[in-house]
Structures are given as structure tokens and as C-alpha cells.
Image 1 (tube, rainbow, N blue to C red):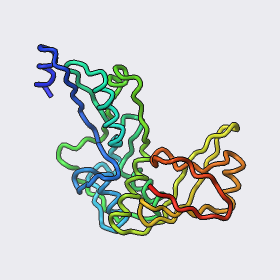
Image 2: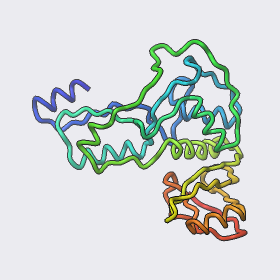
Image 3: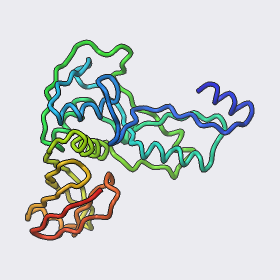
Length: 239
């Protein structure tokens, strides 16, 4: 970190230092003391016991999707600066506490977590961590987040279910815009893994979607075109 700053400022070497918060995504291999979202999802989907260390589970972390991080690298590469250091994480855009993550995973997967609360916090652990990314946003205003904390958790849940061979009933809450100000839609998906999600959309949900927007979106977390609603039909959606 310091060496890159020194060479950048003294000799004009174009170097960027990125001080990462919680970097994650669907391929993240988390462990008990590292990569808490990925490990938490794994425990909750497979029924493994989980220990929350300290702060009653209210400790907060920001999480940035690997796509958004690499996209930040790309923007820097297009217009590099000399000896600049940037905080890089989910910031106030994408963050949650441990308890909020547990609730989110449960809502999406239908799985409950068997956890215990330990009064002993991890050594050197922060109660609250939100990265301030405003400097990078000032220098590269075209860079924007594409994944929210909900998008991130949804992808990790789907990918973990596929890796672990766990059958889940994945339930999403998504918003679809329309001229009337948008409508909230719950979509039930019966999934075995993330690769080939079999979507079963109820008659009532289909009528509601068609009336308000005419389309059920797969969300920003899935890089494919929207899926047009067809009544009384099940569609098989690829990656």
C-alpha cells in the first residue's frame, strides 16, 4: 500500500490501491472466520450449526459483489492515476448485520439456521464497518453498483444449493416498475441449484404482473433477458 503510494507520487507511476471491505459473490468459498456471507449460507442450507461471535449478531458488514469490484478495476485501468488509494466495499448501498443476513437467507430459501450466540467476539473484530467509497466515485463517476445485498445473497444461495446438492424453495421479492409507480411481486421458485431454475408462477401472480408490467424480470443478479409471463405455464430458465 505505502510503496505503491510512494512510487506513484514521487515517480509518477500510475498505481491504484484498493482497500477492500467484504468481497464476495456466488463462487466465494467462505470459512467460519472468513467470508461470513458465503459460510453463513452454506450452514443455513445444509443444516450445519453456526456460531455468532459477539455483539448479539448485530455487527454490520458491507459486501461488494466481485463483478462490481472488477468493474471498478476496469474503470481505473481506463484512466489510471498516480498513487491513489481507494476504499472499496458495499458502502451504504449494500450491507447487513449477521441477523439481517440470517433472516434474508431464510426468506429466500425457506431454511432456518441453527445458531448459538457466543458472548466472546473475535479478536480485533469491528462492530460496524461501512466502506466510504466516495473518493472513487468522485474520480470515476461512471462507475456504479449493479448488485444490491439482496442480489448478492440470492446468487450465493442459488450457487451454494447447486454445489451442496440441496433442494430449496427459493422465494424472491422483486419490484417491477410501471406507470403507476411500481408493484411489489413475490415469485416462488422451486429450485435444485442455480443453473437450471424451474419457475412455477402462480395464476394470481401472473395476472398481477401482466396487469401492472406485463413481464417478470429475473433481476439484476441474473444476466439474461426478462422472462415473459405466460399463464398456466412453467418455464425452465438457464444461467
